[in-house]
Amino acid sequence: MGENQDSTYWQRPVLTYLSREQKERIHQASLKILEKTGMEFNSPEAIEILSGSGARVIRGNRVQIPPSMVELALAKAPKRVVLSDRTGRKTLFLEGNHVYYGPGSETPFTSDPYTGARRSCLKEDVVRAARVVDYLPNMDFVMSFALATDVPQRSEDIHHFEAMVLNTTKPIFFTSWDLDGIQGINDICSTVAGSGKAFRANPFICHYIEPISPLKHPKESIDKLLFSVDHRIPVMYVPAPSAGGTAPVTLAGGFALSNAEVLSGLVLAQLRRKGAPFVYGGGPNALDPRSAVFSYGAPETLISRIVRTELAHFYGLPAFSTGGCTDAKTIDQQAAFEAGNSLMLSSLAGSDLVHDVGYIESGFTSSLELLTICDEIVGTVKRVLRSFGVSEEELALDVIEAVGPGGNFLSVDHTLNHFKKEIWISQMLDRQDYQGWQTEGGKTLKDKAGEKVRWILENHKPVSLPDSVQKQVRQIVKGVDEKRGKAAS
Image 1 (cartoon, rainbow, N blue to C red):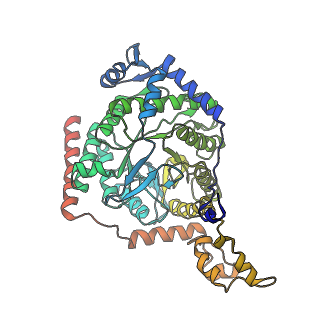
Image 2 (image 1 turned 90 degrees about the horizontal axis):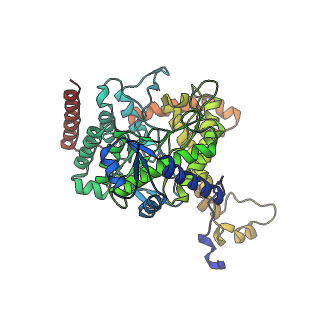
Image 3 (image 1 turned 180 degrees about the horizontal axis):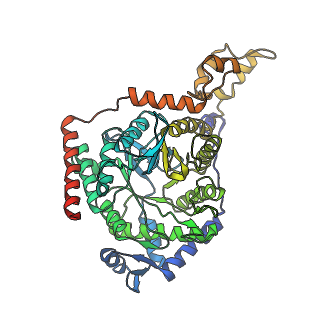
């Protein structure tokens, strides 16, 4: 690179864990699992699609997939997935070095932002999460963050989506219970976008779907995958095996298994429609041997976050990972350590999407306070990832010459012109001396986060959809409620 070009040169820090040979060995192991052991597909439609393209059906629903079908699917899958926001503006570019952040999905409990009590979640908690994410500058997408217990259980998914789409313009990552749920959500999105064609041109949602480890694709997951592919809705296929429980206890064995599960979903998606947008997710997570609880803070889970990203990028696919979450039961030293550590490691690994931000109690409880604290942590992480340039202006040789020995740089124009870009300024982390901290109330970070959450909920007004659109959305939700009610009776 020439001297006059280095103003554009910078190196993003990247964390890697596996060699190319190790990744290739995991890949080959997954291919052997798919070809020899096979996967169970509990769907006649999926079996017909697979067998018609060269897979072998054995023992009922078990399907053996040859390596050639996997390689063909990898060649068909897009290396770039783009999501818009609710207004149609392209916002998330899942490719290259971009890293985006957001909360997790359904938790049965939440830490009430006004009382601090741990309680069961309500639909209003989904509304609150969407509004807080809508406000926070470093949160890029929303998930429900709560499992509403005050709506019909059979229709929680459609109520969650309604709460999100009415209370944020940011992209929505969602779950659905079955085909009725995703059909209703697709109808809502077409209504919001103005038409199905407009929605397909600029999708603002991504569908989170899970197989069942080990090696099973339930009918509901397959139905949702095929519907999403048919309607050009981007999908994340996310197995969640536990090491020593639903996967081998060794990380290598766990990844051979989970990688096979992801690849089999990819094969089905690409056979259904070439170029279907597909995000790689999942990997083995640590099962604490004393409590049998999935551990967010275990070092093995940290390793898994890095490796799943490496495998995704090995295939040229966007990666879905986790961060900003903790096994702690409240916002304490453990919570801060685990949330910050996981955010930094997932980001350095280059995970395209980092979710579960704000989870406490191993994902059983959501905390808007931790979510808000993590927004500050992500600000720090983004500054680290940005690195710095080495242009003539940034090297500042003329400024150093002008100031000379013993001078200072406080009053020079160069400092005024660059300090806002060069020095990240926190909105909540305290950097005063002790007296200044006491003068302002001696507040802890948890205190400040609680105050900020309550301020957002009481003052921030997300951009509203037109009344007529809101009415149509609620009619769709009501229709899904009634349809499921009749089916259950």
